[in-house]
Image 1: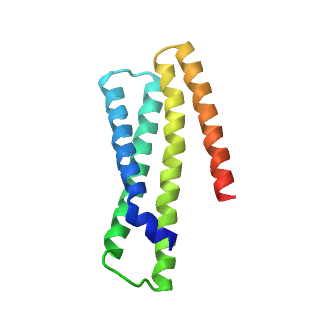
Image 2 (image 1 turned 135 degrees about the vertical axis):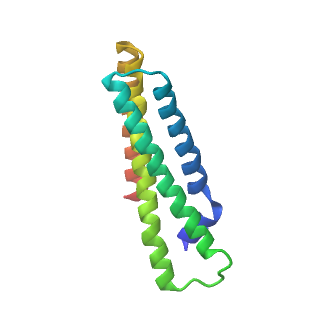
Image 3 (image 1 turned 90 degrees about the horizontal axis):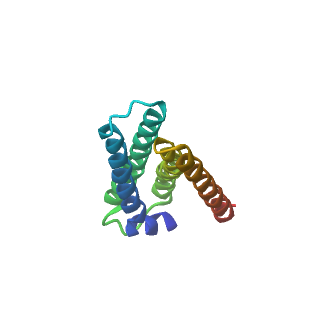
Length: 139
């Protein structure tokens, strides 16, 4: 039943939509910079992939929310389907979050060597802390 409560709050769809737009705007800024460096290309591809993965999570949560709207009693079979489909969406959002962190780490290299080292270290620390927290939450 937690799946239904999570869908009703709309938190995953809200955050996914916000992050998809944010990632896409960064990718567009990289294009506008007209930089043809290898790091610019990698950053563009990572932010684009991040945006698309967040869109998968957004679509799944919105579609499921619309599917269950107005249903008072949810059969166990439907609940199992919802759980399975949401696992796909949540996995896409989680992967997108980790790609977003990696993308930020790489983004600094477009500025300078010092900025690249700093953003890479900060991104790595962030990645590790989120991974630890995720492991503690989900066992």
